[in-house]
Length: 309
Image 1 (cartoon, rainbow, N blue to C red):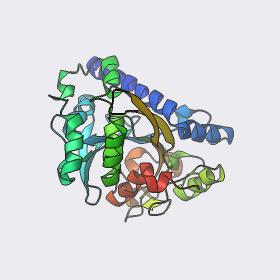
Image 2 (cartoon, rainbow, N blue to C red; image 1 turned 120 degrees about the vertical axis):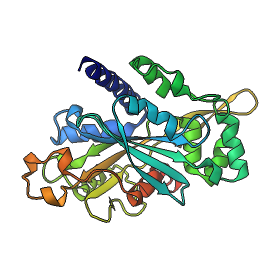
Image 3 (tube, helix red, strand yellow; image 1 turned 180 degrees about the vertical axis):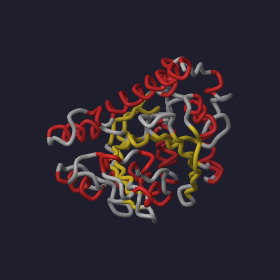
Image 4 (cartoon, helix red, strand yellow; image 1 turned 30 degrees about the horizontal axis):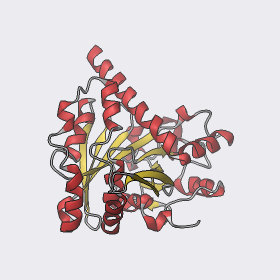
């Protein structure tokens, strides 16, 4: 029991580190939370249930899903369903948490071999700097080292030219080549909010009323075929990023950062009769949906970030 408790404490330390840096870089996080507190939806940020967090990776030797997942499998997460995104050339798995208080995890991976030879060459010029799986050399019981690893560069700073060339073929690729394992998003569970705000449609209207831009790819509300998982997300805000200029110097450019997601998980049919105050995570629709996630990915894409409203 002591060993399990120690691992969970270390996991909490790692997740808190991820969220701290994420909040610092994603203005919409504090903006959404402050609006919710000011309007009485929650008393503090701690009342928000984090449905899931997500990471993006490259499908190359020594990296990708099979490497990063080791961190979370160590802390008691379990790999669940796999997903495939044909047009975006992505694969993904989601991971169920060791306790109901911890967020699910969603890890996606770019199928690098499906890109053009030029794009593959650009990616490998960076990722080949990683000669062995970095997680294998990591003390996973040391929270500070895991936290530092998830926020450390895995390869040299890309050039602005390489970033742009990748973005023309895969905006996912360009995001990862710069951000590495940076947290892509966290997710507010809206079904736990007060009545009048506890559906995606209601919460989307609330966000729009506060001037928060939402990803409208496939509609602002993305709904699974069974109607039990509905998701939405903000549009990633632009951040100033420093690139190599290819001549030994640096250049600063604006690129898309991370975003905030929102999820409504409705009760499974066999639990639909339960009063709202008796519904628990295990009573609601679990997992993810390819169609929903496919559109959520676009929260960092130029078609969304370039929109004026």
